[in-house]
Length: 533
Image (cartoon, rainbow, N blue to C red; front, side, top):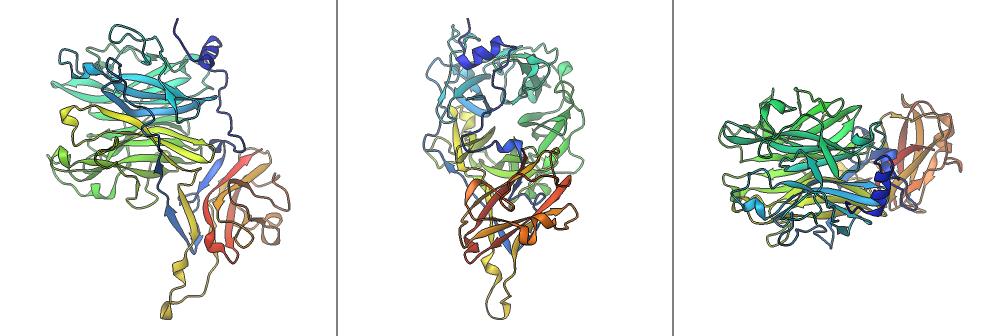
């Protein structure tokens, strides 16, 4: 019998689904993905401001990195723990899927694609991870390993997982997008394969694939038979599934090198043949010419996505190219989307996380996995490592690390001290405020509002007012009746005349937030949340 964690075994015995289908809220904190979030850096949600400046925040590396390491000799991940993967919290357990390769990666008698497999790890706190013996797949003569079952087996280089507990088909509540290979003109090219699972451990193909030597055949492909390295990101938006990655498909508008291309599907089984370019770095508008695809500033492996309901946060690869592989390095950037299609940089060419120094486990290049979790007072972002400078020598690679920030504090808005100037350039002090876009309210239930900010106190406060969609102040919640927030915190309630639950609001409202007080320059605003009761 397959050995599973107790929580998972109980779920599988009941309809193939873990008993707790949604993550429990942290003590004292609600799950922000269930709210509408207005981030400081999101200039679509917060388009209007006066006398404020934006500052992006860089995360710090966790002291325990890498939190998932390569296995020992004979393990299926002894050569590579490649975090082109996912982390998802289900109930009280954090679940991780990553790409593994063992010593057979270097065995020339083994089909080239075959050694790349999907492995599994789990954690109770998001930091300390174990690799359970699943007993599902034979490797090196036994089944004592953490490999998940993929039917049929194909070599998988990149994997992303979605968990949809409300899917009416229990066998499809976990969905996997995979980067597999197909043969064409005596070379191996990348493409998409899709799988589904009831428990996240046993996966079956969603199309009638009959791979040869662990590679998909052209006649079975879901996408056009052109090179595409998919599932840098996988998400659902406005009823459609999106998969993105990097490609060499000619775009309707010419770009240099690796751009982010996206395909869509209504059901995760049938995919569009048309695609869109979702993100292009500024330098890629300058064409370097044929034969120079390795050179220049580019995007690497698409955008991994944190779906926050009304907005998508993304981590992208910042490719620093060179004529030779020894000159190529990769950092991580930060992007955002409000429509699921187009991503943009909230700060021009800003580096979210820089590659490690030579000699460190993440030297040379970083990989964006799709793992984002708010745990306690911290946001954890999971990432991988790949040093492009040495990949041709096939040294062991990878591991999984954590970059962390204070909870949801990716950026801050603060009073711009530079506007006062000196001499002839001195200007009178102006009000420091921002005005949001019209926010659709969910349902007719009472609405609650929360602020994520620091530096508040008796002499530093935020005045919060509610306005109609056409920017007319609502008398009961503006002017003399405005809410005043003087307490720092990650989810500080906003109260109007002592009331937190606000009823009978219009279908859409705007918020106006003003920085006030003698010490208003101390205020650091990161986000506002709107949620129904």
